[in-house]
Length: 257
Ligand SMILES: C[S@@+](CC[C@H](N)C(=O)[O-])C[C@H]1O[C@@H](n2cnc3c(N)ncnc32)[C@H](O)[C@@H]1O
Image 1 (cartoon, rainbow, N blue to C red):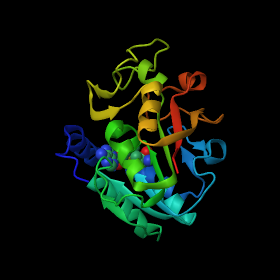
Image 2: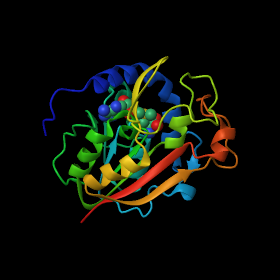
Image 3: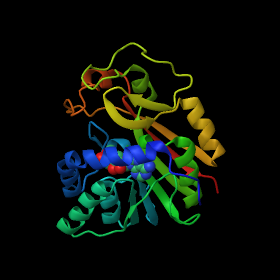
Image 4: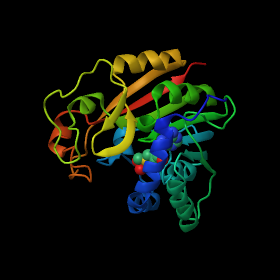
């Protein structure tokens, strides 16, 4: 479907992610090498979070796949997986890993807000910090609904709403226990020292949008760091904060039959 000119955030995030891609090579390799999925910045085990369960196989798309380790996990489980990403550099890393681990599935260079797939062509769609935060929800969620078959499931993991209200505007200051910005009107986020453009909605608006797209909300999982979690590469999200409040959340929604 032609949805008009490519928005500025898609063009800008493409350049940003092409630049960040080298930093994601080693974490990507580690994730490809493992058969035990872990989620989010603290590596919460799949056994605790259950984003793949029940695994129903079929045609799968990962929206904003990056180095495509989630697609690799799904392919190893028997899914017919396609990964799409806006960054050619991230996909180049994914292609290297396909050779290295001898595991192959289609990788598509494109925008999750304008998917190059026909209506109702997937059974399962997933995004871990891909489309889930880098795409405008008013553009990518309708697209996800369009390409899913009736009864198909969409799962996505992202920063929590509370984190977005409390996180500092710079990369070094730890997360505050104060509300630093309003919840009403939250949508597009830009940061003074960071070129990436992200999107975060309040839960109420998010649910209204999901329902307008024809999704039923099955679960909203507030993710807790595992007991052996350590500080991450993101100093602005500190562990002590994340042990008290959810820093991440996973939405599990299903397209109505
Ligand atoms: C953090 S990575 C997600 C992959 C992996 N799960 C991870 O956490 O490293 C974010 C990815 O989203 C991709 N992305 C950003 N905007 C996108 C868009 N409009 N369409 C598809 N992918 C996009 C970026 O290129 C990047 O590879």
